[in-house]
Length: 147
Image (cartoon, rainbow, N blue to C red; front, side, top):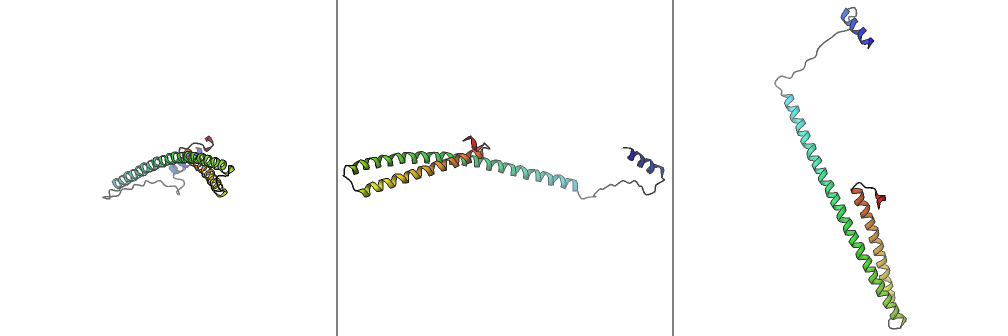
């Protein structure tokens, strides 16, 4: 700007002796500092490439693990559902037998307890499946609300 032009004029005129101009040169004799700097930067680059490859590998492993967890929890939920159906059928048959007076009440109570345990196992399996689904979606960077 104009201020710089004014300062240059004062510098060149010699009227203001507090201004000075100089040149700084730096050279390190025999130290090979530039080659060392280049080598250091190449090694840093190689280290960062290695870190990137490791991070990519870990991300793929996490995706695979989330997918395996999702499949396993789905199969567990299916198994718990079919077990619950079998327990309900057993209860229904034992209830008929009890109504006909062929079995003791303790056997029917045991069947009721096993049926309710099956209900709880099924509910737990559904919850685990929902969590595995959310983790799988999160590992794929998708919205959990897409469930």
